[in-house]
Amino acid sequence: MSVLISLLIGLIFGCGLIVSGMSDPAKVLAFLDLAGDWDPSLALVMAGAIAVGLLAFRIAGQRQTSLRGKPLQMPTARQIDRRLLAGSALFGIGWGLAGICPGPALVLLGTGAAKGFVFVLAMLAGMAIFTASERLSRARQAQSDPGK
Amino acid sequence: MITIDWLHFTPASAFAGGLLVGLAAALLILLEGRIAGISGIVGGLLQPLRTGDIAWRLAFALGLVAAPVLYQALAEMPQSRIDTGWATLVVAGLLVGFGSRLGSGCTSGHGVCGLSRLSPRSLVATIVFMTAGFVTVFAGRHLFA
Image (cartoon, rainbow over all chains, first blue to last red; front, side, top):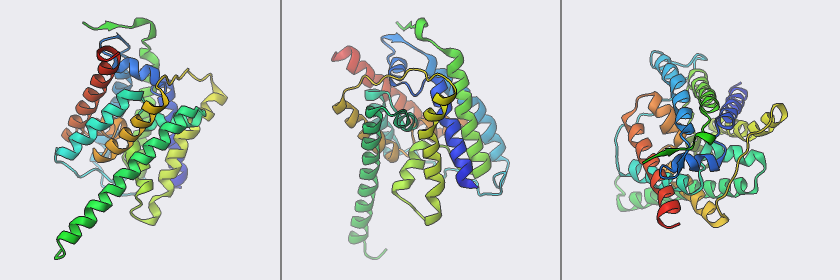
């Protein structure tokens, strides 16, 4: 059941990205180009999404479980550290280079665009490099601190 | 001075699409108890914590990939143009993948869900990646063009 629900929600999310214009990298770059002919449309995507999101997370915050009785897996991290800042900065630079973030990347893959395919491959490689580097640093830590 | 490109400004469809994105995020947290952060959902596929954790992630990602196929069958797809060259595209993809995992989120996880949760951490992340995006486009189009 969760699989079917997740698939449908992914479809809704993707259709939202298409309707909004987020799946058009040229439009995203026009939004990020404050000094050029600025297209402010994408600010309204955020506004629409957050309007619904505020309500949903307010409801979720008052509950112990989801409507289907599942645990609410809310993020627990609170600290604003170097990882958050550096990661967000790198992500923003990548976003500014191509006008594509992870959701629209998957939508572009589905349009059959060769460039969408290449972007998704590079994105997955970037994620895999992150996972590998995390494993490596954990292994090093365990080696230098065998007591733990 | 900012000049607005009124010709390409599409407030109604942008807002309507945003409502749909918000609806998807709302359904995922209220039904499945999960945050709709695409980088986290996809990244989790490469870093499975336990066995039951893969199927829903794959299904969600598949839904995103299938969205344009479904959309095309029902309506005319809006145009989407990728002007970025191949080499830059690869660098951009690597940065988006690595950066969003290091920073624990992207436009959806921090930008939509985090801001909706009123999370200070996500607000900082969103300000940082938006600023980085603005600066990158400025550098590419106006500084070194």
